[in-house]
Length: 120
Image: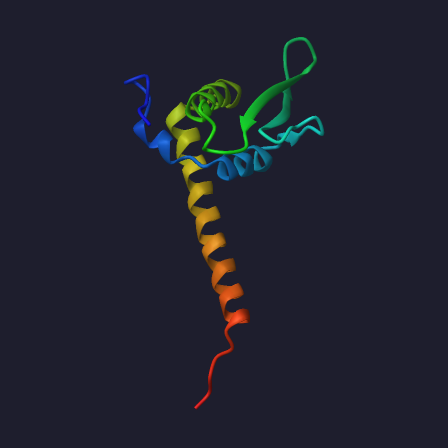
């Protein structure tokens, strides 16, 4: 998958859906009950009209427009948070790393449960 805009940090390809969702939740966004199988809808800070800001996030990296949606999400978050987009991306990638480590740790714990250790 190519990054369509050469000005976009190529590390954006490393963002995972679960990590983006975790980022949103950690930064005070609330997942709306109207979320769908393919999309998560988040409500965040109030806009100039007094309405919550809405951001939509694909639930899977396999979606054809996932990269475009993540690019838009990071751009919007950088404006709302008054941060450089690369800082938002850095934090999302940290969420990816945290999620990966937690998944591996949970998998290792499950493996230990499945296969009892032999004592000699």
